[in-house]
Length: 251
Image (tube, rainbow, N blue to C red; front, side):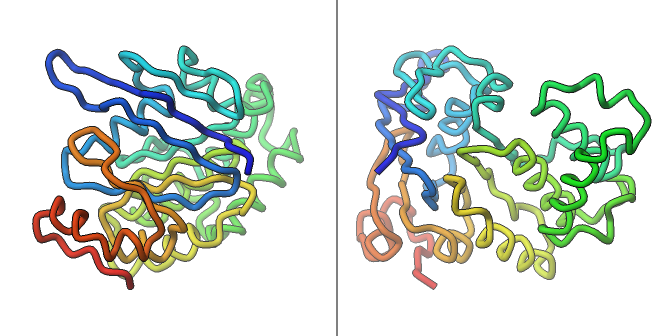
């Protein structure tokens, strides 16, 4: 089993508060892994550490066997780690095609190509158009991002992450704030993401977690509380207890 992402005794402190408490974590190639826990458990902080948004107080992070603890988020992205956020980071005045072309140009260290006439890099255009088709977004390819329904923006964020051709993809609540009638499309897209990419999903929606995950980690008070399969987690009385009555049901 090849491990593509690993955290060793990872700690993050904010003053006297320990947000991440000596976490050991290993993500195999092609994994479908969910990260759950009560509010304030440290889930987003942990993912921010993995992706390079935050610098750990101590511990190590390895990506494809390389120590990336001191690397910036941008350098980690070039090395194969992509990330979506709870609040989207898209440019409202660009179109989805332009957004993906910019991402592809950055991935290929060809930012200069962005300033050439649109269509001059037909390979970038073709790849962007295909990604939009894969995620069911062809019909909004040339609209302004700011005009898109929120669910479409969330799907575009996933397309941007995939355009980086990641080894590891971190999805931070991809369905958060999305109207119910648009959630099913996001569920389908997450379920159909390439098997070559190892996925970590942070999510409060247990329907999405149990539909997606093959393995689950539960964080409590910044520490790794328990790991297991969806069945093991759903039937673990300790998990129900730390959720303080929240529903944890395998659906």
